[in-house]
Length: 489
Image 1 (cartoon, rainbow, N blue to C red):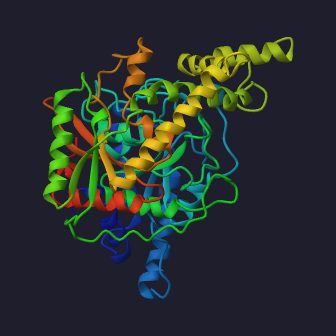
Image 2 (image 1 turned 90 degrees about the vertical axis):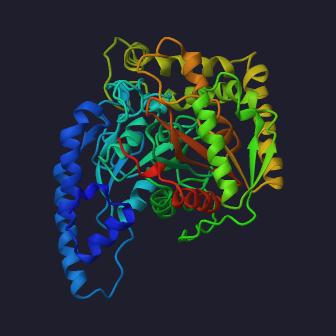
């Protein structure tokens, strides 16, 4: 057999059930790739490879019995390896959020999204690298080192779910969980040439996700193609009594099939997303992909999202404000290490001062300032008003069209260190992804080409609330008739 890690998720599931290979062989193949490649990529912060192999052994015992008498169906992801971004709690595994302030913290419980996937039969390989507390667009802000892009080790993988995207692209894991607060699933998916979903806010439980921006954070999935993303997404989606922001709606059974015709689907292309300064090859690839969808039967309409230009300043007021409140709990007393001092306040100041990284401190200060007396109405309050206008833009546009197609990032993956001393340039990398988070709509990323340096280019589809199934159907039709998603570094 060829390298077992090249199999799609669906074929891996079928192969396990038919006995074409054992779970031990499947997991061992990924373990071998992690051991041989991850020292160069640094996608993982923690691995439990021995534990994964032991679980694979127990899966094989169940599979042998099941094949003799397959009376009951197996869990949908039984025996499939999975990587988890290190901002989601996994019982018994470290959860550092890429920060020294949580060094050594091991949660005693699983995040709901993780628990649902464990119940569905996954085997967790380990925790992937992230910008500290998911604050970043390059995975350079991790306190535990930079993750490198498998397509070019001198380039960033995107962020903050860069470890998860790199792990999938390098076939260190067939699928990985990420989170998206301002583009942190979609942008690394674009930079690493994989597919990823940012669900509607409220579709997937945030219980067990270490909070950054509570009104923006969502748990997402990265995999090699949209079929695989859809399979994992529908397992972890749904209402959760431990997260009051989840919505009690049925999660549809997503069956994508082999149809590539799009009928009369109306796709809107926002003029505000094609801006001066974009890398020309990115614009060309995205426009070519939109024309390809038109060739499959879709109707293409130019639309306007007029308040798009305000998304960046609005996000960088609201998200830091929420972060300053959420990160107040890290005081050197309740979690992680502490630095000694004569008084409680000494401990507090010393621990936070030395254990938080520069970007986290920057955002805490921005947020605290925006929430402070005398500035709240002028900054945070005004930002919330403009957020409502951005949300209304999407709602009005999606009354005219069924979905919106747009670029994910203005460039392909940039060199490591290029934006390190220029926070504004780094923030501009998220200019096309922030609006979907502010509006709460779902967004799906998938590859649509490469630039002249061989770096992947992605496109995103954004749709109506809780209409992820339609996004999957359109992207699936595109992937049935193209091969960008089949290419590997």
